[in-house]
Length: 195
Image (cartoon, rainbow, N blue to C red; front, top):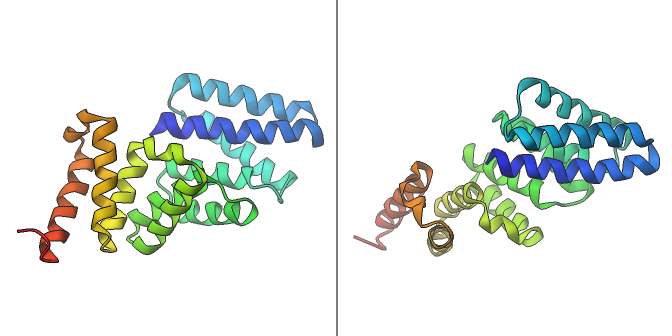
């Protein structure tokens, strides 16, 4: 997941950096680009890199509050720290300015983690509509399947888990995948759909 999030941060900050070159000067763009290159090369953000990217996101929000990128960056960083209240806050603002798949991805994870399943399903649908590539993201698909299960959309949940297995046959040993599958089977059994 960290590789995916780091990549999404890179894209988000690149977009901010391009705009910053036009409106705020080349220094901000160069700093954001360099920080993200370092973070991507490490594949994991250390505390200093996290703090730097957070500061850059906050700066983007202060300088360009009408843009979604800074808010989306803050939501993505909050996902990395498992701060669901912050994720929801920043992702909602980002989507109100310009809906984007990454903000909806973040909402899907956090709404599922906080048992807000209807909202998670809505976020998952919006994320996929905006960025079909998310169907290749294992964690997104597992959390989505869990949410769809909890709202009684068992066929959708089964389809999502099947898509994951098709893409990654080795997923059968992933604990989160197994948990989502057991949860689906339990709910279907409770609904009298399987024995």
